[in-house]
Structures are given as C-alpha cells and as structure tokens.
Image 1 (cartoon, rainbow, N blue to C red):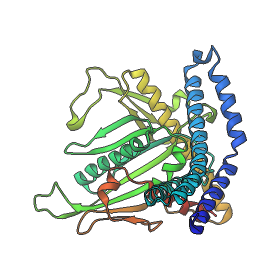
Image 2: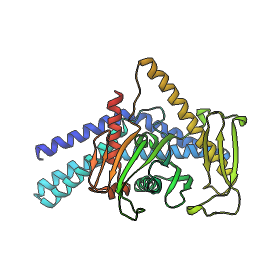
Image 3: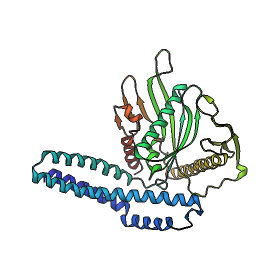
Image 4: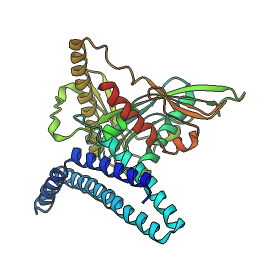
Length: 367
C-alpha cells in the first residue's frame, strides 16, 4: 500500500479512536440497553410525554452508535479495498478507494466537531426563532429566506422540524417564526448560528433596482425538559386567544385556536398557532416561554460569573454573517472568517461548513 495512503488511514483510525474514547462506547451501549428496557415496558405509554422522551433518546443513541460502528467498519474495509486494488493493479478500484477515503475524512471530521459539544444543554433539541430586523419589507423577506435555509438544512440531514408559530409580514416575508429541530445535539450544533445575519442584494421590492442591506436575527434556545423545573405561576402570565392568520393577514381557520402568552414580570411574549387545538397551542407556547425563561436565567448566571472574573463577556452573538448577492457573490462568517462563493447553495441549506467552523471557533475562544 502507498505509504501516504497507509499513513492517512492510520490517522483516520486514530481520530475515530479519540472520538470513540470521548463518546465512551461502553457507556453508550449501556445507556441504549437501559433505554431499550424502559421502551419495552407495557405501561410505557401511560405517560405519553415520558414515553416520547424515552423513544426519542433511544433513537438518537442507537443512531450515534450505528454511525460510529459504521465508520470503524468502513475504515477497515477501505484497507482491504486498497490491498485488492494493489494486487489487481486496478486504477479504477484505486480511484473508488480514493473517493471513499475522501468521504470518510469528511464524515470523521464532522463527527470530531461533535465531540467539542460538551455544554450543559448541547445534547438537547433546539428551539429556533427568526425575526426580521432593520430593512423593512426586504428584512421580512430575508427572515423568510433564512427560515427556509434552516428548514432545508434539517431536511438534508433527516431531522424532524415542528413549526410552532409564523407571523407573516403584510407585503412579503415574515415578521418572525419559531420552530423546533429534533436531532442529536441540535442545540449545541445550531447555537453557533445565533446572532444577526446581514443580506446585501438588489432589492426585488425597489422599482429603481437599488442595492439594499437588510438584517434578520436568529435566536437558538435549548428545548425545555421536565427536569428543568421552570415553574411559572398562573398570576405571572396573561393568556390571549386569537384566530390564526396566514400570509397577507388572511384567516386560516374559523376558531380562536391560536394562543399568545405574556409573561408579566419579564415582558416576554410568545405565541403558537400551528397546532390544531387551543389546548395544544397553549401547551406549545408554554414550552417556548419556559425555554426563554431558562435561557434568561442561564445568561444572568453567566453575567454574574463574568463579573466575578472581570470578563466583559462575549460579543460574538451580534452581527455574525454576511450574505452578499450583489455586486459579487459571497457568504462570509465574520467571527471565523469561513467563506464560500456560492450563496445559492448556502441558502438551500448547505451550512455545515459554517456550523463546524463556528463550533471550533467557539471552543478556541472559550479555552
């Protein structure tokens, strides 16, 4: 075997071994066995919320184990493939092996980034809110484009998404939207996307075809679980019901099933209109409110720690990425300097490079 190829395969194997060590394969298998035992209990679905949590965790853990075992097997198979190609002196087989090696390197590197996610809530599902900011109708349109980007990213990976609320702007686009992404380490992965995203383009809403800069904000929160104990007294909230509306303000149903909850002490307002019933919308809105209050508490605690350390805190979560469609084509992350020259692919959900660069950058700045 070519010495360079052998060295690269050894490097891949060693990198995967480090990932396996960080993951703790024995503990992962033990956790899967425990979850399988819970999932097989006859009374599992007596508590639907708990059952859903168990089955979701089991699916995530099994997927994680399969991925690691599959990568290990593929590395071993690749060694055999190179040896056979060398014995047969087959250029075609060698080319196939080179292609598989490149794929493996990309997948192992992506998994290595996962090992950098060790925050308290990183393993959780993510609650994402997108809001239009400065830029008028262009900003509302931009917010909708960003929402599509994240939905396409989730679709590419096979991650389920549940849209809780969409507030449509009058002329085009959206004022805001909130949705949940269910995936292993969804919060840890998507949290680096939090901040202000800036778009520069020729405005499709300007009759004179002038260049327009518009902004949209992305907020990412960890999804609240039962263990969080976020208690909200009834006296601290006001609940309003209203009729769900779609683009242009038209009504999308004939009952007041949409729910808006105002948390009086903090002024936080959340709403949900995408479920079928008022009860479902209220439950979903409460989960969003709990997530926002949990994040508020976490930020307050971090601010106290930063004050004790004399640290002014991190400002990376403000303006963090520029998407330029005119006069040239480029998307650039202002924190990591990672950039690509194909905005169309990025806006179609190809953002893994930005996410991985963001996770590595954050780890370096924290360290």
